[in-house]
Amino acid sequence: MWLADRHLGKYAGAAWRRIRASRRLLAAQLENARLLYQAELAGDYFQIQGFDASHQLLDATVKSYERNVQLTQDRFDGGVASQGDVALAQTQLETARVELADLGVGRAHNSNMPSRC
Image (cartoon, rainbow, N blue to C red; front, side):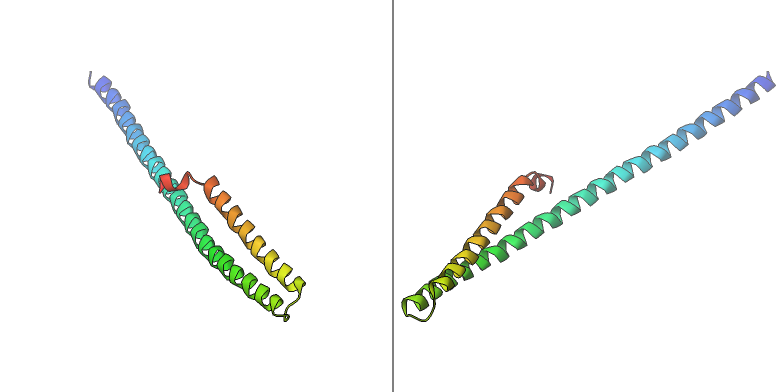
């Protein structure tokens, strides 16, 4: 009987070692998933910050180009600038407006990011 108990004890010890190893593995997998989620969240946060900073910059650029178009038009009306100067100023303004619109589309495309932040 003593031999049978000893043999059973070996199996029980091995089973508990497997259970402990399994728990450690699951804990490591859970920690890995948590770290991956945090890394994705941080990436999303910085991408949002980049969109917002670019939006502010392009918005200021559009306002500046609007003033430039008006100044160039005034200079043209005063005979100091050419129609080509006015066209160039208008082209710069429209290009900046398109870039601002494209940025808005990119931000809207990633609109699921704020819900995760």
